[in-house]
Length: 213
Image (cartoon, rainbow, N blue to C red; front, side, top):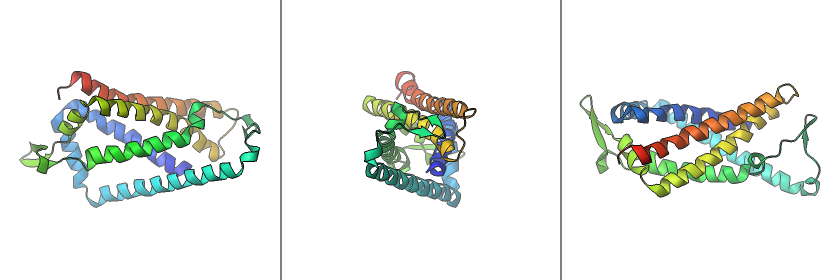
């Protein structure tokens, strides 16, 4: 579960950096999006790895929930990890809820952008004499829908909470919990979670208020 979670954290980090190209304008962003599509089998392999990691992550999460329910008589025992008090926070206690929210977000996100309207529906830009999908226009129009922006912000706040706890617990599961390192890993997890949430949330808010739709 830790490995699959970190695979997705790395992907989300890369995806955030890619999305910063939105601020460079339609041509740079659409050129890069077209480049990714042109990778063909390499892109399919990356998507397959992400899909397998997602299925494994969800399966492990369901298994963990069932195990915890089976051990419910012991739920009132004070939890400890490697001799340290358990860090029970909203992030740690809501992992299933935030995870399910993010799964729904992923489905909607893919339907909206990856499988949304393309060249056939008029979302087209000519770059270097070739017609490419105008994904920048689709993003801009989508981020002028207040309902979608609110949902996006809501989901990405949950991403921050999910990553905050998941990042730290991943290293903990690998035996990295130690009085010297645990506070650092915990703070690093919080930093990564906040950075990802703020980074992604900034994009739709900026487009909604400052970029013409």
